[in-house]
Image (cartoon, rainbow, N blue to C red; front, side):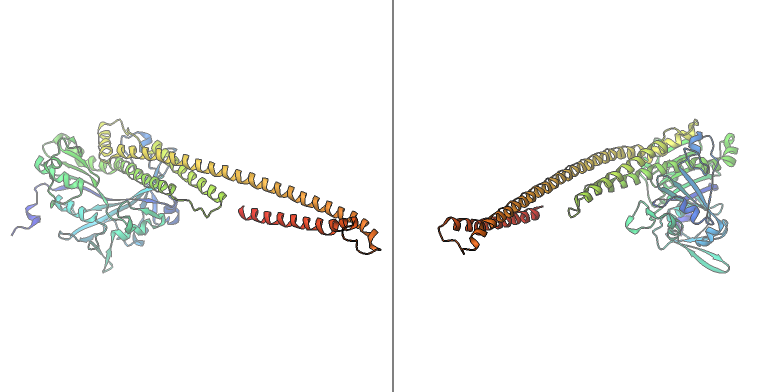
Length: 495
């Protein structure tokens, strides 16, 4: 009985291969945390590019150019051993999982590229044995990218003992110093969910168009041949996801990954170039252009997330238990954070978004293919709308703060007027008391005239003076003081 893998075998063999898993993430910590905190694990690394504009070529560099927006780090041998990777880059692992036979592979390099936008990419360079059928390679990459798959097993022998490796846990350990905030998918897991795949294969024999179409579809979408594409997706010509640079070389890109498929045969004039220089060129320059495009996409997604969070926090209800000055400070802080985010977005658009990368037509054409299918312009348009919303939110915060300032000034004026009124009232009371005391003192001198002859007779003039001095005036004064104190207490309660 013919097995699935037997009837799918094709005549062409893979001469050269490139498979990379790419895990995008956003982080909080400073970039230097990765290098300085664990210098024995990571080393800065530069790559040589070919025929790009100087400022584009140096965007990711260890040098201190003014236009540098990112750095690339390479995991050292000690870093590999610390995190459970095989110590040697040629040390084979056995991959078991999914619906395919076990396959051998090596993890040649692990790199981390960090950008000033606080977006980064962890890259694992995978290599399979020579002469492996291309469909097995596509299937293996399809299974490897599923970081969430707990049934996926990578094992290797070390000093006679079997060691098991889980790419999901490896990713979390390697990126722990950076305080990752999101992996952009399945955020509730707080762990990487799925990787992008960049793969390029050079075959030793020509393929028919009927063979190129499905292979290129499965490669760029990182699907398996269990998925049957429609004719439009499958056909390489007139397909917006596909670009044919040479008669024997095709590029394909989707949101799931990037693919390059080339073959030798019937084209002796370019055979030497494809055998010697083509794949290194794909590995360096074209992958670099893909990484820059990915940075634009995921940085825009990240800024969109931050903008949404800022807008949501900006429309939240203010705690009215806070004092007036505390609420003013809250509005000021909100406006400051939104303004800082706007400055980051504007800086990103100036330094990281560009339309031209090279004077070479092939480089420009592939870069434009990346830009189109990663929806960079669409994301920029959405971010422009969010920038307008953020500007409106800042204006609203400033209006609210101005209103609170006016309210605070009004309350301060009322407080000053209240203090002035109280002062004037006390002056009146004290003046009244002074007059009262003076009156009583003057009256005492009159009363002394009657002291020797006893109390005055009722109805006499002396009796009237006696009542006025010692009964009516003190009673009136006490009544006024009592009324004033009650009024003062009520006013204090209202304020």
